[in-house]
Image 1 (tube, one colour):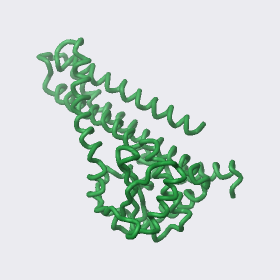
Image 2 (cartoon, helix red, strand yellow):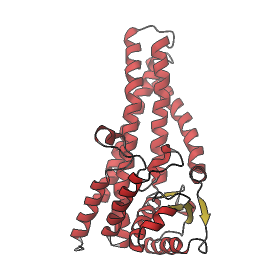
Image 3 (tube, helix red, strand yellow):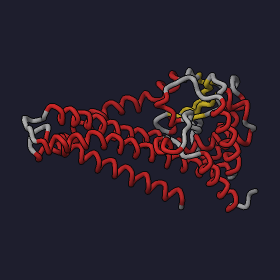
Image 4 (tube, one colour):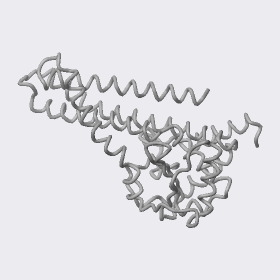
Length: 297
């Protein structure tokens, strides 16, 4: 039931993004392109531009991410323990065996990338192989395989497409509010465009982050179900949270922090609403509740 709820929440958030984009398109079409009847033109124009940019990143995202973190694709001979663990989870989940990569950093973490299960890559840092036992490592890898199973890379690419298009369109609305658009000098229209230009990108970002957090909860649950041991992942998250605070990631791009099982960027209070991951404590509490329901202690 929780997995179904997460799916419905994701769908709702996507619908909200589309509605938000419709508002931005209406403003652009009505006040920058001339005439309120052009709102569809404005919406589709900027959506097409953002979609083209994100389509390119979707097909090449795994190569870009692996390159940015200096990850190396490895064989069973080069990383036997990691290979055996991934193979075990792959067999348990019924998914194709993904390629395996090792990231040369002592910061313990892991991520999955690739546009579909046949093109997936599971990457682990050198640090995570040192601090987790075999059970905890399997919990982490099951989480990543759940992302692959649910095609979360596709989900987040679509979310990025919409958020990027909204931000791109809002930027045009901002300049239009300053200099006037479509030959119109309506102060009311200029104020409306300015408001949309400021609020729409923030709303799109918050929705995008909410989708990311929703997918993390879902991957925790499905990963725990794959191996049947929620506490394996709970213990791993506890270790990873402490280790990442002590030794944060110093390589790669912060924009890809949502890929990692533990967010390299930490914060609390107001900052929490801008986090790509749910709070670790909340994730661990949910996993422990699952274990209690399964009679595991």
